[in-house]
Amino acid sequence: MQLQQRNKYLQNTVQTATPGQLLIMLYDGAIRFCRQGIEAIREQRYSDANTSLLRVQDIVSEFVITIDRSNPISENLLHLYEYFNMRLIEANMKKDVEPVEEVLSHLIDLKETWIQAAKQYNQLAAQTSGNTFKQAQSTVI
Image (cartoon, rainbow, N blue to C red; front, top):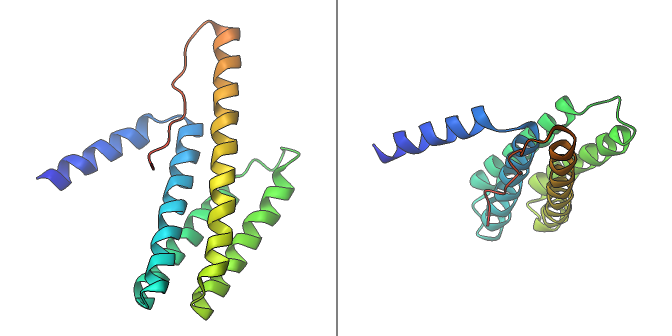
C-alpha cells in the first residue's frame, strides 16, 4: 500500500512540475544512478552496476533528445552529453569507477547551474508578470 501511495505522489509531482523542475529531477536521477553504479562496481556487483550505468545513459540520452537546438549553447551541451555517454560505456566495459566519478562530478555541477538558471528565470518571470512561480527544488540530498 505504501509503495502505491509513493507512486501516486511521484506521478503527481512529475505531472505538475515545470520544465525546469523536470530537468532537475532528471539530474537527480542521473546523480543517484551514478552513485549506485560506483557503489556496485566497488562491491563487484557488476550486474547492478550495469543496470545503474544504463539508467544514467538513458537519462543523458533524454537530455540529448529534449535539448533546444536553437539555443547557442546547445551544441556544446550535445558534445558534453556525448562525452558522458562515452565515459559511462567505458566505465561499464572496464568496471572502473573513475569515468563514472568524472561524469558524476559534471552532473552535480550542471545540476547546480540549472538550479541557478531556473531561479533567475522564475525571478524574471515573476517581475514581468507579477506572479510567483514554483522554484526548482532538488529531490536528492
